[in-house]
Length: 370
Image 1 (cartoon, rainbow, N blue to C red):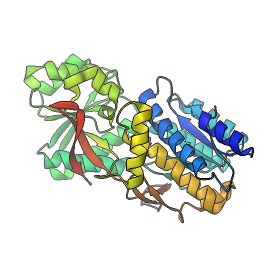
Image 2 (image 1 turned 120 degrees about the vertical axis):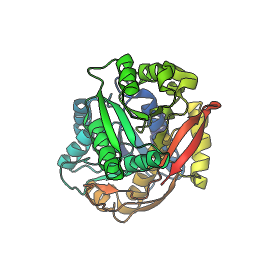
Image 3 (image 1 turned 180 degrees about the vertical axis):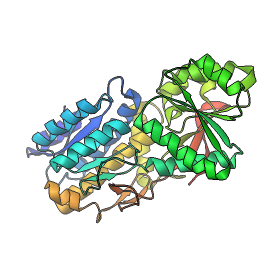
């Protein structure tokens, strides 16, 4: 589907549009709320681009496809969008889906700017066709591990489900904590109930339980069980993947969902553009926009600048990653190569550890910054 603002812009100008394909999780089992925020940010940026004259007088049009957290569905969408002549591909929240999309885009010679998926190995091999806005998992999760160490936590338990993403996170935590005297104990959620998790915590030495699991199930039942177990009153619950960022977490857990530190990719202060965009997004979403909404806006802002300055041919877009500089909502955006990362990367993307304030779960507290 193309967005209404895209169609109206095309009707105003009467000209052919410059198309960007967008992958967004809009149905289950995808994280629908994250998808809505991502799409809201992208659509706001498209509207701003068209209000500013579009791409050399041509309107920018967003062709949206629902990934539904399904890699095969995403692969089919990438092939379809490439056949429809999009100049570039944008978006996606789920790392495993984004990895499939990136491999497909690379094979098709389609430039792809990944918005929100952090898995380090976004492609099998280094590529010129793919760039990424969010920080790689190895950086963000090391920041999270530093936060835990600074708070005096050396022994960590992880409630984990099978996933390339969760396995990578566990490995990053273990590799970072072990040289500093820390340990990571895995609790396999394919075999344990929330009650069994509580018993394992009570019988071990971990002072932290990290939720490397899906939301709402089993994350919400685990949190409820731990909060109600008097033996575990001193155990910190954490969710580095960012589940508490979204309103449905607070709606499901209320006060139980507070004081659960998570990673958020926002700076201490938004840029003037970010402040303006934040006001628009609050009105559109009916609540405080998540960092994912700002990632969506910045994705289109970057692609719009690339298309204006380097043309709409795919090879020119891919060749521009190293040269483009954009003032985004969260700071100046430039791409570079990072050791061990096969795609062009915004190396200075902001990273925070944040939680919801127990005194006011609608308010966020910044606990640690990188």
